[in-house]
Length: 121
Image (cartoon, rainbow, N blue to C red):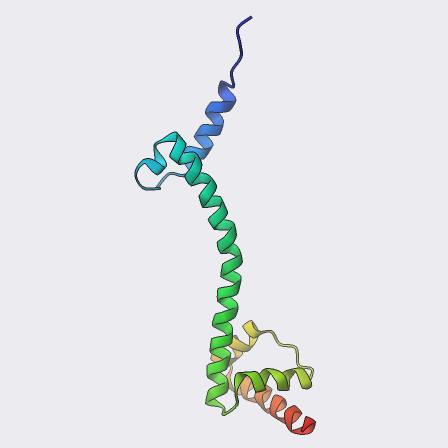
């Protein structure tokens, strides 16, 4: 009885991986050894960067809120402290959107934070 090698399953697996690396430059999309390595590294990088994207967006929102606070003569850290004292729970994404699209509403939130800081002092 002849020895069975993977045959169709191997071909399907290779086709799937070659399809995934289409568009990579040079032998990284043609040479099987480099294709396997590129495929694994791409998956690892994708996982890492999904985490990084969340970090980057939070950083962007904080920068925007900080700029809006500076325009209203309050530091970002004091503003967040005042919001915690006032028990206002609006996340940084929504604060950023408010600062850009609803400045009057953001002014009201800043006023609430200021009042809470004064009451605590």
